[in-house]
Length: 331
Image (cartoon, rainbow, N blue to C red):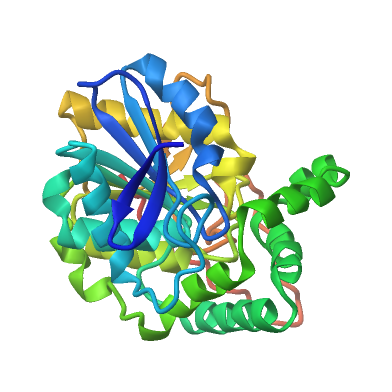
């Protein structure tokens, strides 16, 4: 089990691929671990990359529980890990809790990045997210890890995935109990007590940045990703169709294909970070993977009449409604 020393702590990591190849580093969500990125390593190593995944402090096989850890320590630890592994620069891909760490890392250690991918994450706590986090922490402290696990499945996954995996969920929960520690999870969540919004510093991120948001992600909805998109000039927002919060687990083939398209553009030098919004193909084998998003991407219901729709006559008892203004398409 490969580990590095960070202060008094042991950090477990997995590194696959040949030395000298460009590195993709994956950052976990709150209850995840390095093993969950194995399929991503299997996908990207044959395509000429090395893949680095690790358990953050308080996760998996790294030191836990960790008392009074500061949120900023996670980015410092990643810098230390890259240094000890003699990795000068990396592509950084992250989700949820790991996405916050990645944004902080890109702000303070941007010179160590080729690119940044931020998925299902946020740069500041919206009132809704603040209350939701407080409820999760309360449940973890008062009811324990099993309650949090039970809560996260319906929050993170779609009804389709839950229906297909319902019989497996109890075993998956038990595996989660082995790989996670309730006190460590509580400590990680409490690191947000002194969390300061990263939004004022997002403009410091200069590397190519892909932001991915599930179409139906109500945990970190579109407003969270819109903040990131609007503040990072060299970015694009990609909406993953029919996806929820944990689409890296539920839709790995789609996620890997989108990441591959992004990395190909970065490596080829033809990435255009213009803050535009795109929709990802839901078929990884489709010839065209990204389509420009038309209309108002902040809305679930689009404004405007379809070109082929017949006009609906106004009720005779009320004045006819004014036609909604057309929306300028995003290019």
